[in-house]
Image 1 (cartoon, one colour):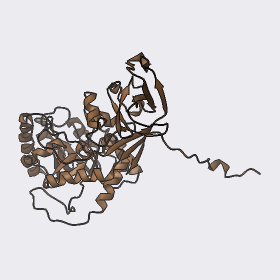
Image 2 (image 1 turned 60 degrees about the vertical axis):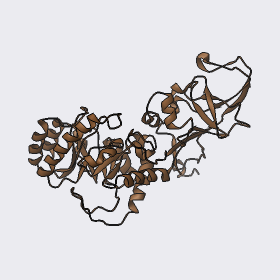
Image 3 (image 1 turned 30 degrees about the horizontal axis):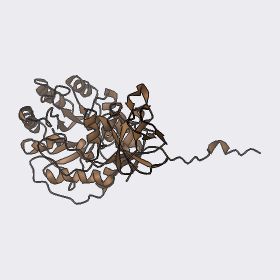
Image 4 (image 1 turned 135 degrees about the horizontal axis):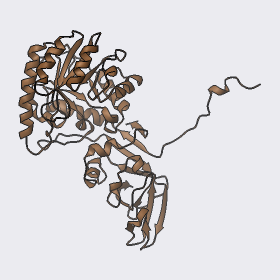
Length: 400
């Protein structure tokens, strides 16, 4: 007789992935606390949008929520902005871009407060089913529609355009918004926000211009809405200007993951990501032979070549062809030939005894290494953000 439960059971297959993205918990918490120490007047909201800049949105949220749950020391606030009994060094909220990302966190069991910073459809903005979250209103027409449709109390942040001119209320829209918000008691204005366009620039002229406009607007809203709890203008690099800004929160994005981008000061940050793979083949080729698509690299000597099962599908930028490095046996080995979709080749002639199955560090967490995210970004003439977010979401993230 056939087992009636057979269809409910599937054979278990043990699988060790060829690529592993390692995320270092201690580094993330170290970076968060470095900013807290440097800017004690601010609370920091971790930005975990875009798969936590490649580090894994759920994994990073779990690290931060566990950390958050260890904080239990009550404090009295002596600043001029309202605080509602929050705890010492508490994380005010996790920042995501979209309703989809917020839903991912809730389905993964994350209970911390979430702020959606980006554009969302009206039905998502006024969705009462998602608990303990706030949405950001990014333009006046959306505000009008939300105020018209809102039938029960919900929490929002309002974005002001102070000069970046991507999103936010601008000019006379600000005064109209105050009247509009007051017309619907269900609209709970919890926060006011904006964004600095050039906080990581070489000069601070434009930043200071934005700060003046922001401070004036913040004071206006404080007078009209005494219950506003959060004022946040700056992201990672803008924290440097915090003493000039009427704000109690800063959004911590790239700095959380260990990257200094401010030209004004450098904190003791630790990169929190490493990507590893394995040697998939080894062969020796004589001088004069060529490697890869379009035969762009030619051996000047007898060369020991290893292939690695990573390519631009796995987040290795194609611009690293004939320029990049991987670490094999602790030594930087040049990427030779074109980076392919799922394969890249490296010269391991000087790396000692290397065999199939040996570990390869594709992206190093040591900022001094030739294959650190920062140095990879320089070789590709781009920014670390781009390299990080192109690491595919499906790759296994392991918390270390």
